[in-house]
Length: 399
Image (cartoon, rainbow, N blue to C red; front, side, top):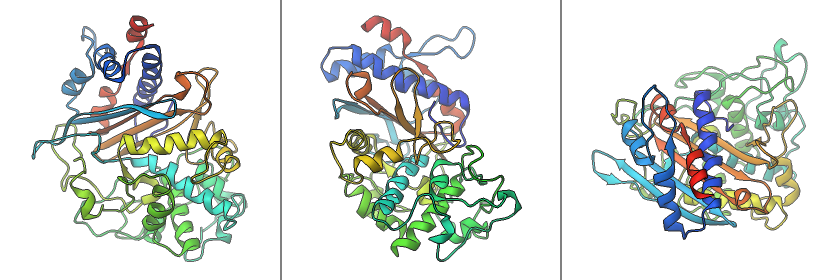
């Protein structure tokens, strides 16, 4: 199941079902893309959550659970087969969601952070398996007795095996003072999160830590001498031709007209329309499914040695290999094998937004070359139910 910080495991199971299920649904259909979209919308049956509740299609699910907007993209044969958006990006202004609407990707940001860190590894700026304090300049991790004398390396941080605290971040209101990265790591004002500290020895087990990811944010700025968003935008997003996406927090003026508004469970908009996340490595990316598809496709091609826009095949395989006692957690991605095929993916949950992506590692069948991308502005509580879809009846109809 795709891991999503601060999310209910039931949501993750349901989200896994729709991601994998739609791959099968669309792979089994032979229609042109527009007809496949209709099949998705009308054959995606809502799983009964309450006794007597009738199944609902996609748009009925959105209305029932007060989901303001939904954006989807599907990849087939290393190309975006179709993309479509539903609902309103902003209800107050009656701005419709389009395939160009930007959503907070939340913890999907960690996948891109790992790309950047492993690129530094490729460029011999750091070693993934050496004590991270060797490379940190302006802040050092304060080891204590809980780490049991073991040192935390960068691979630990990227795979959530460093034994650290601070699962995720709540963000900041648009007009609130923002902490710098060191204040976030130390848990000092104006940071609204706890200090990032050891809870057990590194390598013992996997424990999700956005705090650990934030250490790599400091690591990157120390090693490059550049602001985090500048390095990610120029070195990673630009290399992937993800020209609509940005790590700027808050986004610059030229992006603001494309931003979706986040909403709460009662349907009210978040104050200021969205929170700001100075924890950029953990939660700072704004993107849309079509733009993010470029990253998915490049990852699939690089894994097979057919492209190297950011990382070569060797580095990509390091990134996509589960590390230590991680239970499927690789470097910035999670690896799942629900059948004979391996998939990589990540979920995300920011205040008012949820997201997930899921793609195959190997080619060869339609299922293995498909990716569905979902981003939903909503609260975690409302979207837990709204994303709990099943496509099993649709499979039967289309096979």
